Image (cartoon, rainbow, N blue to C red):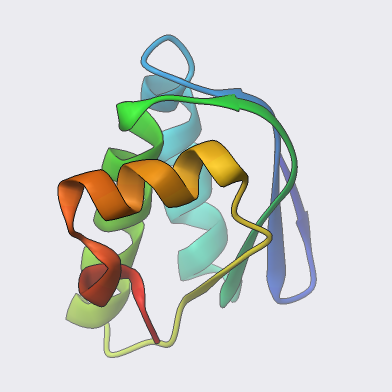
Length: 91
């Protein structure tokens, strides 16, 4: 994970094994000014990626901050559709 200006770049797998460690750093990056989460260099996702995105979005809403997601991998798009959570991740 790399925080560059207003963008948090997630890297490598975003899975049940990695999300617990990613969550703390991702939340801190978002609270420090990241308003975009970029999945461009993510190599693998599972349902934990949805949980991570939903938690970051919930935290942003509580702080009345903007947060958007970029370059969602095809597998994550499929999970968003499967769980019908697109409206929770938009905007």
